[in-house]
Length: 117
Image 1 (spheres, rainbow, N blue to C red):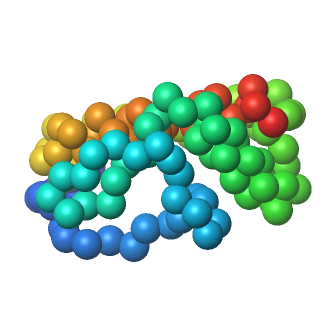
Image 2: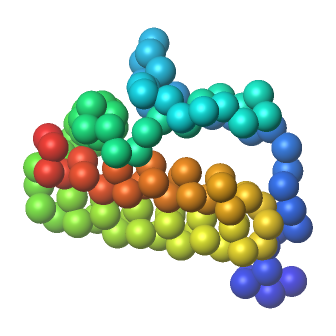
């Protein structure tokens, strides 16, 4: 198997979800499709602030902060890498085009975190 080949040939079913919002769901929500959990509006500035706060809290637990230029740069590089993986998942059919669009919008929102902390 080539390193460029996906380890899973297609969708793999339900997965564990890590909640970024303790005890609350982000809002506003987009319309539901097929009984899936509604997706937050990626243009919501309150959502961006909650994402930034969650990211900063995690970094602080590791003795780092997104207010540090080097840490913020590494964070943004990691998000770029994640976006590349999302694109690969879309191209290979692991996630749908709509799923990719929604995840990409959330990642774009996460990129605002260093400016919001």
